Image 1: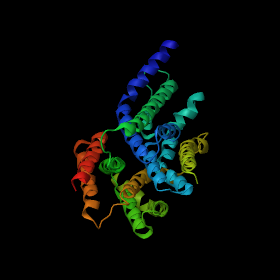
Image 2: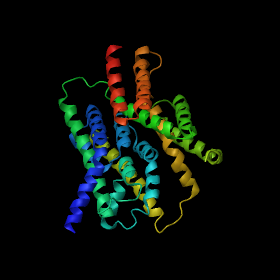
Image 3: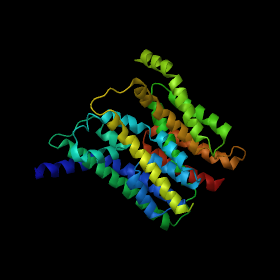
Length: 235
Length: 108
């Protein structure tokens, strides 16, 4: 039994290694940004521990600095993290009998963890739920490590960090480009761009997020038939 | 409101709603209840649209009236796209694009 557990942890660690580089680098970027916004080590640790959602934490920094209301924060979280609903839906069967680890497995289901575990299989000779638990745990450790390192680096950095805030833009442009290259249907991305730009023009930079979210959801729901026909044609 | 207290409430709200989204499907669809088609559909299309919205959100304060206000951002966004199409490496695209921006704002 002990031998299996040791092997399971070892395998989980190896599988989680590709996430390490990404999480540490993105975490450092977040920590530096947060530090520049006036929130140090403690906040970086707290946010990576309790929020534990990369893109949302980046958005949280600008919500904090712009003094957004709690309602805006709640709605923005719902939109930015809505994809987690769908990760959850697809993991229901996989996590069904996970036992006492289940709450943590669900809490720690980030994009990267999902990408490692979504096929629903576990390597041979490992206990499936223990394996998933340790992959999730290692990933969060990398993220916390990166975020905290960023705060510390942000405090002692010998050079001028002006412009580091572009890392958030770069992150989302990268994700959008990747989705654009892999998606068959570009309509959702275009709807997102057009609705947001439109709302930005009408409502201004300070308050366009909520109207944009409403408009995007409405537009996507209106387009459901067209979109599914298009999928059908291509399939 | 006190700034620290405000930040604390913000972190609490964001944490709570993130966890809510992660736990909700396991609670709603417990016991093999079927997932409605509209949820499946939104699951396919919403992520792309939201990322596009976040890109606009990042660019919301870019001033189009002054050259130094928009040229570094636009060039760096193009650099990120080109880097990503070329190498398809998330880390390289982010680090390269950010470095490009940090250099450009010092030159312009």
